[in-house]
Image (cartoon, rainbow, N blue to C red; front, side, top):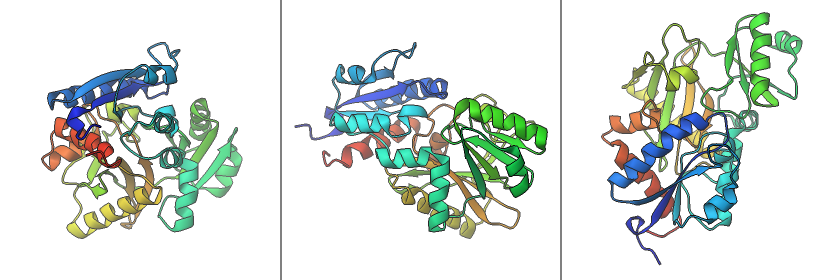
Length: 317
């Protein structure tokens, strides 16, 4: 029986079929490179393959490995299905359980849950299979944020300030998901908090360039003009409050291992939780490596830490 992670073979699983495949194809090889630089044995698995036709069960059964580092984003890799498959195969893996992943991936279910337990999150309306702009205008005021319920990396998310923009945003959201979330816009700065091994790292303040309405996909992964604030600009008490709120939101969904929590702060100083990401990006633009680096953890040490957490939670260390 293997005793340490150094003796194990780590499968870095990336790719997938979701709209975030391109991001995952950046994250996965970097994770593998970081682990190899630390002396680990690594195999790489492009789940479903480039054409999206490979059988993931056959792929994972045909590879000899002891623990999985999930570098998938969105789709099956973040909604709990790949996690459930790995559990059926008896393989430990990084990140949260299938149930926690599924709950966190569905923004509508997450918000219903948070409203029920008192986690502050913006007011919203949800629609299944359609979206009624008249109802939205009757019950909400512009501006609003329109989101597909089960996508990440801000894919399909748009801000609407009038009926024409709302109609367009609803159509775009429905291209990605049959379930649509329309959320009250919080006018204020955005923060993101990395959590690893149940420890909240220093928040990062996000300041997109003026030509970006939101911290969107382009601002996250393509543009070099987004400003990242570390330290985030909050005083110590407010930063502590933000970290505790992020931990509460993360724990409430049953998340474990690692993740990232996105939060807005309104003009009155109130924090509002937007979502929890259970499989954050690990690209050169990504926020988790940035937060870790700020506290002295380089990329290779970060991926080692995340992999070790997966190994430790099954008592194999």
